[in-house]
Image (cartoon, rainbow, N blue to C red):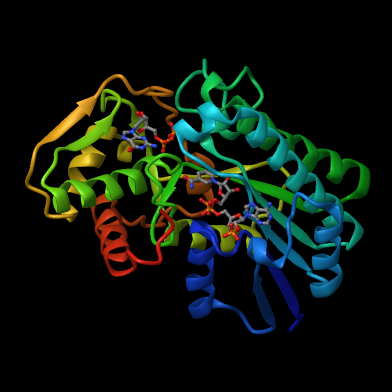
Length: 316
Ligand code: NAP
Ligand code: GDP
């Protein structure tokens, strides 16, 4: 048995807390898991990052920490999304090289793919054209992770890779209406509509299509990538194409889980963002043909229940 120390950056966030819940039950002998938050150091700052690596001497790193936000945050802060993520990623990758980390797994996203593309998108198409203008700051910072994973492998023989999740949701999400992603934003808005007897407002037309992965499923698959997937080329972690849904259906599932029976309205003055970003999970299915994802209805019910039980402390 070899001992390993696995450092999870962004360990206090949506995905980090899901990995914590998963590994609390499923860690392997010899594994020590460390979950970081920004309280342990600011990863935009090289000196803070160096101190964290000196302190923990990780053998493996799952790199989740990032400036993350939904469509509306991305539209208004392109400079910050680019700069903060570029700084964080550079500090992590270079420390992983210097500390001879055996394996680094970083997170990309299906929203960083070319805007004008063929569907479904697969791992080979990442750099085939500019991203959607709404999130270009975030997208270019994230794309560079993939470029540098290959560069670190070629020049230094590093075992760095990345995963490409679709939209994620679950317990510990950021339920901020202004800055969060669509599912936590809708959950929070529906909660207020129910409490105040006001309409539940869906932003945009409700027609854009998305695939959603429940955070606990993503956690299990991310840990599998860390242990068993060894290539610098990214791997998409997504539900099947048949599970793609219009935003309107997502909102109705939130209303049902919240037992909201009032009026549902659309605010079409708000942006729709990308119409779709249908991802192909053929590569994942070639390794994990039988993996069963939590259904969106079940995942939304669990997320609503978590939000109601943790309302006082949830990020919002
Ligand atoms: P999240 O809930 O917003 O959590 C972000 C995490 O990063 C938190 O632990 C936060 O620490 C940490 N962090 C942010 N800035 C930091 C800094 N300067 N120094 C140190 N730590 C910092 O994010 P998430 O949704 O779990 O996302 C995890 C990863 O998945 C990200 O790389 C994201 O780009 C990617 N992703 C997310 C989605 C999605 O739908 N959410 C979709 C695709 C890809 P504090 O808690 O202390 O602030
Ligand atoms: P994206 O998938 O990267 O575009 O990010 P989001 O998770 O923010 O999803 C955005 C889609 O959901 C767009 O079509 C929005 O118009 C729609 N949407 C509807 N209501 C909301 C809401 O309350 N918050 C957010 N973020 N998006 C919403």
